[in-house]
Image (cartoon, rainbow over all chains, first blue to last red; front, side):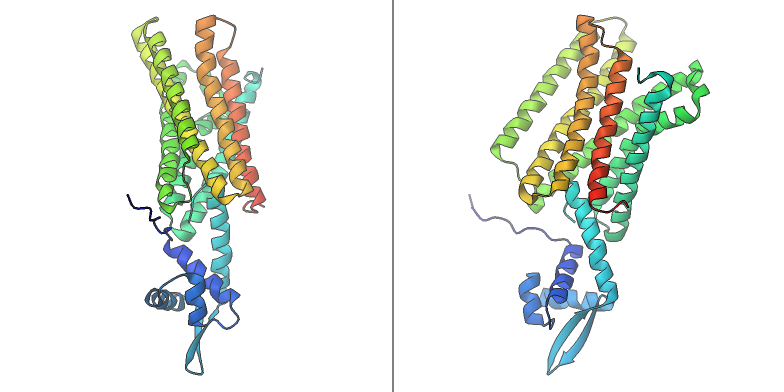
Length: 96
Length: 240
């Protein structure tokens, strides 16, 4: 029998929230930092960053041939709402 | 007595409003993030609000409680709503069972043993009580009583599973609100258990346990349970 522990499942909303929190916490919002903080592969991170940008939750800007991401007011609101729902879920033992 | 003067109905009405408030918060959360677990939670609290809702209707329409025709229907609806409570607890239990996939709920051997022991004890009691009931008086009445007993026993079993799951979740997350919610479920379980055991004790020992007294006890403990949930939500500032 294998001792390998299965990876913890993360919902799309949680991944969004993790990326947004990483962008908010980082000063420069660079992809390398986000890769580490959001715990995603480069391809997956790019895919989710694209979705977040299309939804208006983040802004993308270029700085010396590098992309920099920043959180928008809508993104901040998403994080506040997510924190509330997450707390509600945690109260009743449910992961969002 | 709590039952006299509509006090019991008033307590049940309060329970209805608290359950409804929790349903609305769960629905709002579901509407925001479309998590099916939150939907199941909202559905469960809605179903749990149905039995007290019936009492709330009785409170605002007291003459209905005097009419024998209406009383028969109320009794039938009451049975259906008890079944709805069973479905509600089953939904919550299923969410916790599924939650094991996310590894936020992991049962230790001790927890599994405790869960199995309590469920086995509850099942044994149910079989004994059913045998006792079915060997007494007229069949149709007893069958209804056994069905009602079955519903409440299944509720008890599911609530035991829910409490142990929440305890397991609390051990992982260490959030005080989970503990408060767990206390809420324990209070609800105590009410259910008292309702089940006292009615049997009354028949076995003829010791003066009254049906009304049991009803009052269940209602008060259920209200306290829902209030515990409400306290947890107020602590989160979800209700201001």
